[in-house]
Every structure is written in structure tokens, then in C-alpha cells.
Length: 395
Image (cartoon, rainbow, N blue to C red; front, side):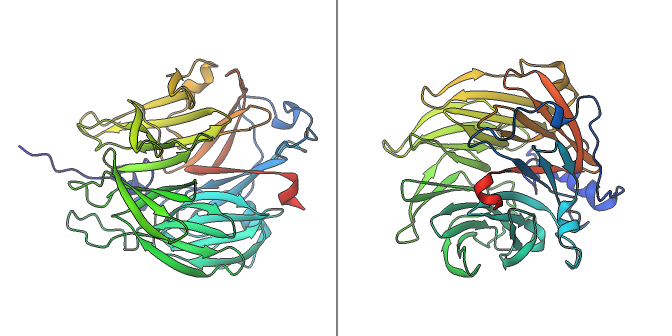
């Protein structure tokens, strides 16, 4: 008997969680500075004046689909204070607050960019204080990457509908970072997600996430100069995140099908046009720091209705797994649903978010480079993406 497959609307949240989010609603706290289970961050950090070090970071909370609960938190290295929902404080007159489902946050040229998926927009703010500058409207927008004066943003193009016969191809929008206007579109495959820039090309992971019995398995390679698809590279099904390393290799995660096909991580080498390495790893969130790729995932199975938290650390030059599970403090075991990872490139601290039950506020965990526990902090609902703030972007 053939299994009827469902899919994931968010990066790692299966439909059963998404449905729960539409039914259940948790309390919303605008500001809370709280460090349960650990010491206050400000008392644990090195001197914030360390050259080239971040002075803080923003955390984008996804929120629950249909609840208009996307939010942005901020952690200040200088004061050690963590502020929840800083966007609302900085923009009290913003209609409907930040919007519905925050997907990714990035700082580029002193501006803070936040993709708000189901509100069909990219919100643009001042990186220094989170004050709103404007927005660009992109339907069902997903992820972004920057090259020069342009932002490249993947779009599912059509509405949120699970249908194996879904016929709306996705695209990548080319956005002028000064005017915030769309200047061109490049059509790719169904439901494009992660995107990265390397060597004059864009690498876009096509998921086919709305077509669960017909998942995509291609990576679209776009020539930036002509803004046309150069080739489609076949990898695994239901592709998700994309990271380009310093050697020009492209790391792409596959979610699998939540039944028989397990999550996977691929390393594609454009120079040889081949898959240089592959790993049985759930890399739902990836962060490149130096020559090390850090990943976390929460592999879900509909057969067992269970999730398996995962952590790995990969040497991108050698293309070898240095660490296949968490070997640090036992507090990592408290994380129910690892959702996002970020690594301070100077201090080496590792930040991992916990989406919990995907309905109530989550947590942010801080670990030192050696894996020892530092602190944790309550966040908004489904903490999804982190962007470090540097002094040059805060002026």
C-alpha cells in the first residue's frame, strides 16, 4: 500500500505542528530579560571592545503561522541585556507589528533585512536600532543572499497549498538594496528555499515542498551577470539550506521525505561539477565559521511520530565530519527541538535555539567554543534565525 506523504511548511516543522499552531495560541510578552539555568550573558562575555568582534546580535522568531507573531529579539554584548520583541519598541506605529512567519534575518551594509514569509514581504530596518526603513513585497518569500548592491530572494511565488499537482514555479527576485525595488526575476523550479552566492553564481535549493509525492531534487545554478539559469544539478529530495564555503564548494541540506528517505547533507563542487561528499546528517540549520560548518537538525519521522535532535561539525576543506553529536555540556540534552545555530566568529561561542513544542516561546542556549554551558534565555515563538551586529553596521 502506497503511503500518502505530507510535507513541511516551515524549515523543519511538519504539518501536524503547523496545524497545531493555527489552533493554539500562547501568551505574548513584549520584553523579558531572563537567564534561567545559567549566568547573565554580560557577566560571561569577553571584553566587547575586542577588535572585529560583534557587539550584539538579532534573533528573528518565526512565530506561529496565521498568528501574526513574528518578532525580533536583541542581545547586547556590551550590557549583557537581552531584549525581546525589540521591533515593536522601535516601531510602535507599525501596523500589524512585524507580520506573519519570520524566516530569515541578515545584516547587509548597515541594514537589517528580515524575510516575513506569509506576510509576503521583506522588512528592511536600520541595523543600529531596528527602526523601519521600508519593505519590498515578494509573495511567499523564503531566503536571501547578497552580492554587491543587490539582494537575491527566493520565492515560492504561489499560495500555501499542499498539492502534488501544484503548477506554480518559484523564482529568485533581484532587489536593488538602495531603492528596495525588484528589478528582475529568474524562474527556477518548485518551492525554492536556501540560496547562496559564490563565484559569480547563485545556488538555489529547490524543495518541491508543496508537492510531497513529487519532491524536487535539483540545485539551480544562476549566472548573476545574465540572471539566467545556467544548469540544474541533481542532488537529494526536498532540498533546504545552502552554504558556500571559502573554497567555492556548495553545501546543501536535504530534508528527506519524513518517512523512508532520511535527511542528508551534500557537498557539491562546481569546479568538477560533481558531488564531492555526502553525509547522513540532518542539517536543517547550518552556520559556516572559518573552515568549520556547524549544523543542527531535528529529524522527524511520521512512521514513529518522533524527532531526533542532531548536531555536527564538519571540516569543509577536508570534507570530513569532526563531530557527529554533541560532546559538550549536558544542558544540550535539554533542547527539545534544535532549530537554529550560529557561531560568534571571534569569541567562538555557539548559539543554538530550541523551538520546543513550536507553539509556546522557545529558548536560546549559549555554549562556549569547547561546548561548556554558559546560559539560556527565553525567546519568542520558534526562534529561527540569528544575525550578528558589528560596530561598522551600528554607526
